[in-house]
Image (cartoon, rainbow, N blue to C red):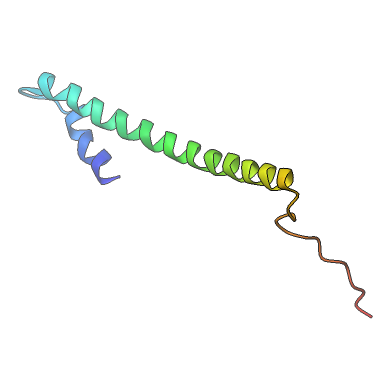
Length: 76
């Protein structure tokens, strides 16, 4: 967040030489936004696929399920 906010003056700045610094600021801010979005969306998906693949392999080998159901007991 600090790097993104630090790049905003470069991207939004005006004045002498701003036309040379603006592409750098846009690149910094855009790259950080895209990389954060990809990280936040792809990491959980990768872990879900790895878990499904592990369950698939466990089922092929005939292993026990990850969690066995606990029988319900009456509260009497």
